[in-house]
Every structure is written in structure tokens, then in C-alpha cells.
Length: 397
Image 1 (cartoon, rainbow, N blue to C red):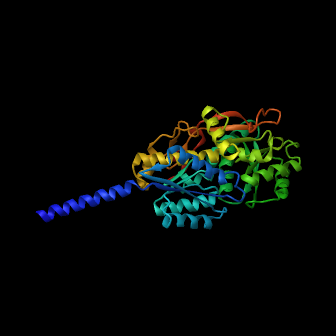
Image 2 (tube, rainbow, N blue to C red):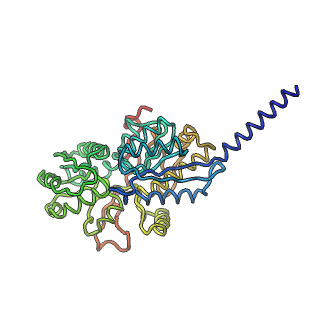
Image 3 (cartoon, helix red, strand yellow):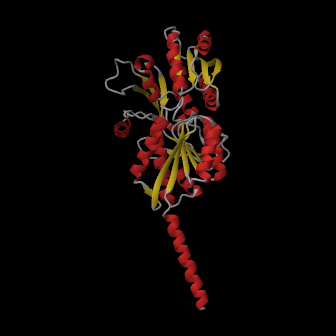
């Protein structure tokens, strides 16, 4: 009996030690994105700063341990992104990867996260496939997607009379999906698509593509690209007098960062869709001003969305009292999202975070009254209209 009692005491002590170690573990978060290429302003180091702000605001600790942040540049290459993610998961003990600008990289890491049973929360990549046919139990999509952009900008311009479209499309997964989703919305609203041309990622000369779009006589030229590709498209379109000739440019994925890069003289009149604008309300302004003090610039929806995603992940870890991916994923899908970015937001069973989007028009220089005063709000697109339902998405979870 004495031997049995000692054995039981030993087992109990071991269990208590194990529990203590498990509870004092903290978490490690990785921000993986483009920090030197075409999307460096779109997300880049500014998203890293937003993640740091979320960790600081949460208190810097969870599960009795420190919250660590690691970052890397995937160079917009799926193989590079996958290799970094594998190293982080297998060797460095990273528990969650976020941001993941560039859809081809995001899809590759998304599949790896499924295999490794690790959480990923995509913010910067656009393709709706992440929560559609490529959905998986540990994958989440936060700020926006190609469907929301299509409903916002595509739907609004078609209804306003822009009923014929021609697309300049980035030649990879994001561009294809954005063109496809927007084409469907255009047709649903009585418009027609006259054609499309694909261009390489990180392209510098858009002249031949723009001449094809101009020759199409389409009322709207849809730019199914992003970052510097969008900026260069718009600048060169001005050289060809496209807007002066009566055709309208639609920046299907244009954020505050690209508008800032273009300047109001070149960007005025553009209609865009974003999930956040710093001057939208008091809470948005409060975050924007804090971000401005740290970085010297206002955040776009990718940087604000990264803050929201990291903060919500940490809340879910705390609520689950565990960093086990199944437990955390369950909490992420149960808990409401209620911050300045995702007011009244909810996470669907396929991992899609549903929140309101905003249809915005870029102001003219004369309309802008202060630094970074770039947008006027045309409409709020309710989240339930902007995003696919689980049934519409094609997700088989």
C-alpha cells in the first residue's frame, strides 16, 4: 500500500509539473509577407508594426508566458514562403502565421498549416478560394477577399452605368480569382465583359496592355492587380489619356497605401473598396493616430486587419486556455469580433471573418482638408452581402 501511495503521489506531482509547464508556455506568432517587393507598402513592415501593437495592447503575455513575434519576407514566391513556414512550424515552434500577402503563397502555406495542424490567419492575400474549395479546419481569412471587392467596386460601378468591362489582370491566383469574381458580379448586374489581358507580377511597362484595354472601348477598365502594379497601371493610363477619353479605371484592390503613392492628383475619382478607413469613426481614428505616431503613415485595411487578426487570435488562446490548434480554432469560430476593424464581426464555419466593407471614392486635391484625408465614403456594404455564405463558398468542411 505504501508503494502504491508513493507511486500515486509521484504521478500526481508529475502531472502538476506538466500542467505548470504547459500553462507557462506563451505563444509564438509569425508575420510572413512581402517586405521588399511589389507589395512592400501594401503590407510589409507596416503590418509587422501593427502585429506588435496588438501584442502590446494584449499585455505581452498569455498562458503564463511571453508572446513572441517573428517575421520574414517571402519574396512573393510560394516555395520560399512554404520553406519559411515549414521551418517555423517544425523547428522554431511558431504557433500561428498571419498576414500572408500574395495569394499563391497564402494558398501554399494554408495547405501546409492543414498538414501541421497549425493556425493561419490570412490578411493580405485576396483569393476567396482560401475559404472556398481550399478551406481547411485551421485556416482563417480576415480583412477582405476577391468576392467582397467584386461586390463593392464591381457592383457599384456597373449599377452606375459602367456596364461594359475589360480587365488588366495580374498573372497568378489572386488576379484570376479577382477577375472571375468581378466578372460574375458585373454580369449579375446586367453588364458584360469584353475581354481581359494578363500581365506579369511586378511589371513595369503596361503600355501594350493599356492600349488593348483602350481599344476595347469598354466603359470600365478593371485593374485586377495590386500594390505597385496598380500604381504603375494608373500612372501610365494617364499618359495614354484613358480617363480623358471617357473610360473609367477601377482599382479593384487599391488601398490607402497605393493612393498615397499615387497622390490625389493622379488618383482622384478612383472608386475603391476597403474594410477599414482611418477617418471613419472615433475608434478608427484612435488606432490610426497611434499607428501614425509609430510609423509616420496612416494604416490601410491590411495593416489594421493584421492588428485585428493577431488580437483576436490571442483572445481565443486565452479563452481556450490552450494553444492547441483545435481548441483555438473552435474559439475563433465561436467568439464575436468586436474591435475598431471588425465591428460586429463573426467568423463562419469555413474560417471567413464577416464584417462590413466600405465603398470609397478618392477625393480631389481641393476636397482634401488635412494630411491623409483621401477618401469620401459612398456606401457601407454589409458583411452578409459582401462575403459568400458557407454554402455559396464551396467549402466542404
